Every structure is written in structure tokens, then in C-alpha cells.
Amino acid sequence: MVKSLVGPLLAAVLSAGMTGLPAGEAFAQTYSPDQIVGVWESDDGNLKLEMFDAGGSYAARVLHGKLLMEADGKTFKKDTLNPDPKLRSRSLERAVLVTNLKWDPADDRWEGGNFYSGATGRTHSAQATLVSGKLELRAYMGTALLGRTMVLRRAQ
Image (cartoon, rainbow, N blue to C red; front, side):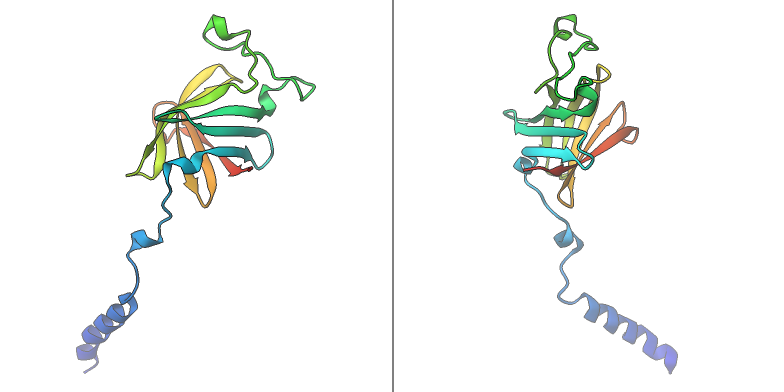
């Protein structure tokens, strides 16, 4: 008799538990492309970027970067490590470090971008995702699995 009740009882519990519950996707946070726009900074204050609409893609300019500052903490370094000799004398102040991020609605993130490191002179691939209101900016070489993620919070 116990065996004969298990199947219908289990079905009833599962059915009752699922009634009225939204699908799993209803729990997922959805974002719009322009939500990346604004000023973002790291929790430690070592990096501050301004993300902006660059007409068909999104980009970011540096507002502050500890590794990009001279010892006085006020003056931006020159872009001396840039592979383009013509750019080596420019200041890194307000330099555009992130370019070509494009919104991918299927993955709910910005992909296909580039991240230029003024501290090393190297350009990496980049993608960005909003997670719980924080911007996760990932720079990588080759595959996104092999990279570094910077977590930034909205400053303004």
C-alpha cells in the first residue's frame, strides 16, 4: 500500500510545488545595452573608468589609475610602452583603454572588445558583464577562460 501511494504523492507534491512558479529565466536579471554607460570604479579606488556609447559599440576612458600615475599621485604617466611610437609621448590621462564592446543579447553581456593596458603596452580581448549591479570587465588573451576580471562598482 505504501508503494502505491509514493508515485501519486510525489507527483502531487511536485505539481503543487511548481504551480504558479515562473520559469527559471524569469529569475534571471536582464540588462539593456546602455546600462554599461557611466562612471565605474574598483572597490580599492585604484581604477576609475568612464564607459560611454561610441556609436555602435561601447568604450571606456581612464579617469584614474594607480598604475598609470606618477609618484606624485596627480600626474598621469606618458604612454611610453605603446607599440605605436607616435603615441608614446601622449599622456594616459583620459586615454581610451576599452574599445569595441558590443552588446550580445543572447549572452546578456558586451563582447568582442579590446582592453589596452597603459601599464604594459599590451592590448587584450575584452568582455563585460553586469552581475548584481557590478561591472565585471574581463581582459584576456586567446580564450576568456585565461584572463583577469576587474570588478567595478558604479561611482555615479
